Structure formats: C-alpha cells, structure tokens
Length: 443
Image (cartoon, rainbow, N blue to C red):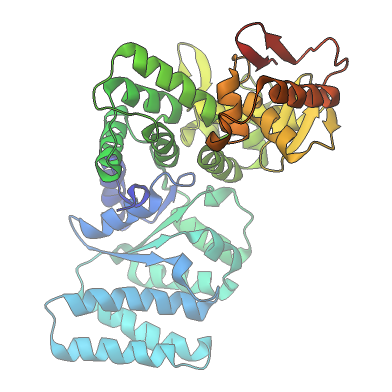
C-alpha cells in the first residue's frame, strides 16, 4: 500500500465537494503535488451519497487528443454500467459502443457513438452524473479546443444532471485561456476548492500506518518531530518517516535518546533527496508571483499581496501569533536556499544540491574533486554543528573505511577544501576547527 495514494482525514474536503457536485455544480479542486488529490477523487467516487461519480485519470490517456479523452471517459462509465444491476441488453449496447469508439478512424466518428453512450448512461445511472478528472493539468494545456466546447455543450444539454470535478496542481482559473477553454472555465470558476493538508491527528495516523508497514517504531516525540517538519503534507511526511525510520532503533527510548536521534535526522534532512524532491514539486506547482511572495513574507505591493492570498488559500502560508509562517520547517528551509540561489551576491557558503554547484560569497567554486564535494556537502547538511572525525569518515568515505582513514588523511582533505573555499586558508572563515571535537561549517 502506497500511503501517498491513501486518503487519510480530509473528511471536510470530501463532504464539501460531494455537496456541491451532488447539486450539479462543477468544481475545481486545487492542491500542490502529493497532497492527496488522486486519493480524494477516488474517495469521492467510492462513497457518493447521491448521484454517480466517475473517476477518469487523464494521465492514463495514450495521447493528448479529444479521441483519447472521450474514450477514457466512456471506458470509465462502461465499468460502472457493467457493475450495476442493469439489463444485459443495456450492458451489451454499452460495450458495443466502446468497441466502436476505440476502432473509429478519427474524432469525427467518435462523437456520435459517445453521444449515444452518454444518453444511455444518463438514462440508466443515478443523477447527477459527475465526471471527476484527475491530473487535468496537462489535458487542459494540450487538448484540442473543440474538446472544451463539447464538454460545455454536454453541460448545457443536461444542466444540473451533469457536473465536472477537475483536479489540478495550479489554480486553473489563473492559467491562460483560449475562447474555447474559457467556455469550459465558466462552469467551474464559481466553485474553486483548495485541498487541505492533513491535520496533526491525521498525520499521526499516517505515520503509524507507515511504521506498521515498514516495521519501524515511532515514539510520541518522533510523531511531534514529523509533524513539525512536514506539517500535514503527505509527501513530506513520508520523506521524514523514511529518514527517521532508518534510525529509530528500539521501541522504547528515553528523552535523551530521542533528542540525539532527532538532532542527527534533522541535520540529514537538509540534503535528503526525498525531502528535496517533495519541496521541488511544491515549488514547481506555484506561479512566479507566488514564489516571489514566499521570499518576502511582508509584501508592500498589491500584486504581492494578491499572491499571498493565493498562498493562504493553498495553505502554503498561514498566520501564527500575528506572524506569517511557511507551512513546514523543511519547506521554509528550501525557500531560504532558493532565495540565496537567486541572490548569488549573498555572503557565506551555498550549495545547490540538485546541480552540485557551490558558491562562496557569491562566487561559484569550481574544481572540487568528488571527495572534496562530498566532504563539503556533509558539512553543509550539518551547518553550524560540530562534526566529529568518526562521522566524517562514515559519511564521506563509508563505514568500511572507519579503521583505514586516520586523522592526518582527514586533515589533508579539510585543508584542500579550505584552499578552494576560504578567502585565506591560513585563517579559516567558514570551515573551522573545534579543538578536541572536530570541524564545523558556519554560515
């Protein structure tokens, strides 16, 4: 079971969309990557209090064409017809129409069969019929214009007996629209639903399910640590669970053991590939004005304030004691790194982990060997923390070298890195020695 495709909590989201769509209103569901949109739409279709909710995965279309789009819709409806207590005659006709659709030579020949099939469905399935389009972003961008006019025509024909629910990562009403797309957008513009993050109690359920699935243990302190870092985002919660689960150890631990474990994992999360991937997905789902607003949390321009309102709607930022905060500690750190990356004149050491590029005081550092880069990256993930020589060997060379790398070899590697990053290697500013304890990288 992949927990990212399991809807945990969010009953308010389900109820709100059921209520709107059940009355024949079309709805735009907006949520950043891995927040649970697919699981939400599947839940809508499994437990509808009234009407018929049909799940259509736009990512499963073989091509971005009207023919593939309407074939996917009819296939999803056909599955429901075959599962219902309907006559064999109706089921046979529905199957025959699907066969005719998939063998049609072009879209022009698909339309009559689809229209007949849709009439058949509307006559035999509980109304309203609600088509739930998952992963609609790419379909919206690439489908032929006539597709949107066809969707609008169906809605005009059936009125409140038909509704659409479209799930996207970006707010679809903010995207550029052709005249044909505008005809469709009019249907959903009045009902935009921003998907909530998991509540703390839901995150606990998520973590406990992860622990049971992976055979690890999480204490109450661990759960608080995960919530603090991920704050209800399922993708980030899973990434932190993976990192923490790898080192949690015995089922019962005291507070000091938990504290040491959390300090170690917190340092590792800075360069964790899963965490970075989740943060990048959220970042990519935002528009440019929203990204800029995240880097200036006290905007003065009207445009920045509008972008901040959009971020609040998406629960990316929130108010806490009269202060604007970013939803999770890990994403806030990611934003800090983006800000430094976009301002290369900023002082200190900065590493873009994705491209493996290094800057010091705004100047890019080139010529680092693989071992030198791994040492610097190790320190960067533990910035402002003292790192002992045992951990340096374990992380840079590997556990097999614990008894093979002596102090002199470590000192030589540190010296080579200093030669490349320090303004004056004889008077280290960033990579400093802590007598009797090891080394640390400072901001």
